[in-house]
Image 1 (tube, rainbow, N blue to C red):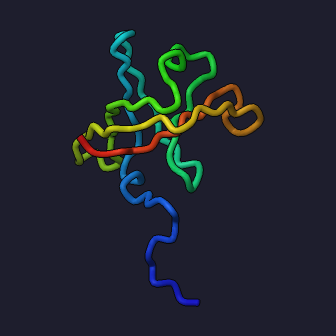
Image 2 (cartoon, rainbow, N blue to C red; image 1 turned 135 degrees about the vertical axis):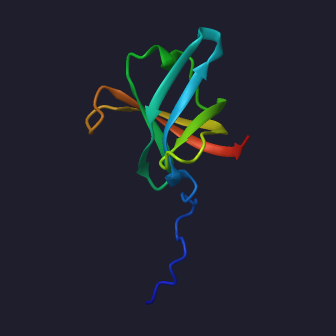
Image 3 (tube, one colour; image 1 turned 30 degrees about the vertical axis):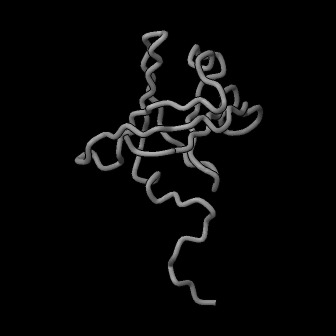
Length: 110
C-alpha cells in the first residue's frame, strides 16, 4: 500500500508539535509554573509534575485554563491557548516514577 502522506491519527498533532513548553499561572495562589511539553501518546500532550507539587492542589480534570505556550522556534511569539485538563495520572513504575502526568487538550487559540 502506498501512503499519500496524510495524517492517519484520530487527532491531528501538527499544531501541538510546534510548542516546546508551557507556563501555567494560578491566580488564587499567585504562582507561575513552567513545564516542558511531553508528547507521550497518540492521544495528546502532557506535562510532568512532581507528585508532591503544590500545583496539583489547583488542578482538576476538566479545568479549562488559559495557558501560555512557548514555540520550538524561538523566533515565533508565545501564544495563549484555551486548554482543558484531560487527565491526571500517577506514573508508578515508568520513566516518570514519583511524578504525575497531566494531560492537556488545546481547545482554541485566544
